[in-house]
Length: 248
Image (spheres, rainbow, N blue to C red):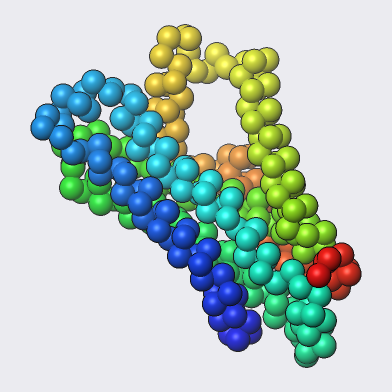
């Protein structure tokens, strides 16, 4: 197992280095908000945009990490490698479990970088109203795990391109659901239409993970863990089928 995991990190080291560099640089942009001759005035002028930017840096980190996740499978899309895996004792299980562990590790690294940047900013610049995004980022982590659980069997069984299509459809479906909900659902709980963005953001920043998991949405998100394990078993079953669909 460790051999397969080492192989996955070694063959994807360029992608991993790129992701780590992007995550560090992207989250370091948080501190650029506090650079200038008159930081107090600049942040006051930004108003709610300041808080939105603080939140967005963490949210986009997971978007970037998720966008690169399918690349971890691309390096193994070779018929000869697939036949070798099948020929070794428990080779398929080791190959798939290794991939799932790798994706989980990179998701946890993304979570750690985002939360660390937020905590550091809150400690260094405590006089500013910097939102604590730890609870929301933890929710992002479980959502990321759920998305990876859904798309990975498609990548294994049909190929990376198919996995990208599934990911795109999931994102499009989420966007459409949000738009339709905002257009037709009862959103009176937000209050008046004045300063809607501020009210929604204020609601998001007050989310605490321990309270969130008690809601139906929280229970749905927590299902990502058993779904991820089930996804691994499905991918193991689809591995042999996927080999025959590899072009080279």
